[in-house]
Length: 426
Figure 1 (spheres, rainbow, N blue to C red):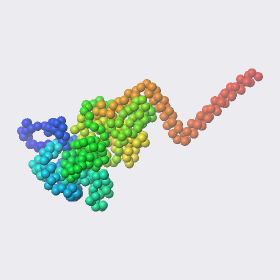
Figure 2 (figure 1 turned 135 degrees about the vertical axis):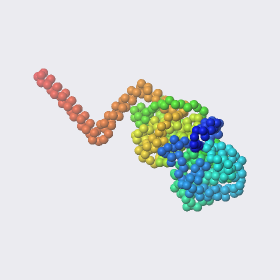
Figure 3 (figure 1 turned 180 degrees about the vertical axis):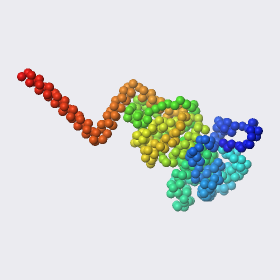
Figure 4 (figure 1 turned 180 degrees about the horizontal axis):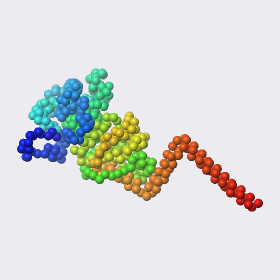
């Protein structure tokens, strides 16, 4: 929130509303605005929460370091409109019908945008066309009217720019109302379902309208419908993946999505969906956390990340889950661990009835069983024996040599005792 300047307390309007309370009321009414994050949250990590290459929407429009991308955004508009064969004015007219609803999507819209409907709608069209064109490259929503060497909208151009651009497109403050995208597609492709088209662009299932691209991305990660559940604040503890595997004999199995997360206490198997860990995944994960805190009722993503934080506490855990196909990506084990530590830092909110937390609690109960604890002690003893005496050939040879020497000593002792007895009898 921007703080108003005042010279003395006499200038303060005591009747003015609390902007944070007003924002909370808007969210509770399910208008689901696109909001600016508090400066305290972004402190020391601004690049994670603000765009560095492309501005989408009004919050960061016009910043000097983002202006070079405006050329490509306008090129996207030209291609999108020409390809559709529909006059540009038609798009403007359609979005003008919902201009008030679109403005309400932004919780902290500056007055210059509130006062100028035409300028606001032009921004929505330009940014909407850019989003649709960039996301469509390389998917089955084919576009083939760009040059093969196009620096942004060719297949090669998207590969080069994807990592930097997608980080910006998945920041909380850099979003466009979903209504803009569906309206543009409904005009350009009247015979197609706009939600299906956007889902194809983002390589996810169509679960109906969403709030914006970040919300759709979160849906793709979790693959679960919204649930009306209460928040839980008591932090359950748990063992790491390597402890569960080596000490308790719990196996890990890869499954397709969030809804399949569960712990089978009869077979001692924890099923988890794969999670991609990449250099550029910290940004969207942190922004998804920030977004979910404000607008979500079920805290699905927080619950999933809390489970990952519990399971991954060392490089040994990373190596184990990677072998099981749970952790995927090009980074080495150490880099994966550091990345997970960044986007799971200070996480303490989750849903006690969510699949990840229920699975975590069931594992804790399983691990407390007396029979399981006995087997754990045996496994720890065997593991320590292996690590201390059989972890390399030299220690193994030493143990074998010591065992042979001990056996020979025992045999010799027995032989000596028996020989002495025979001598006495004679």
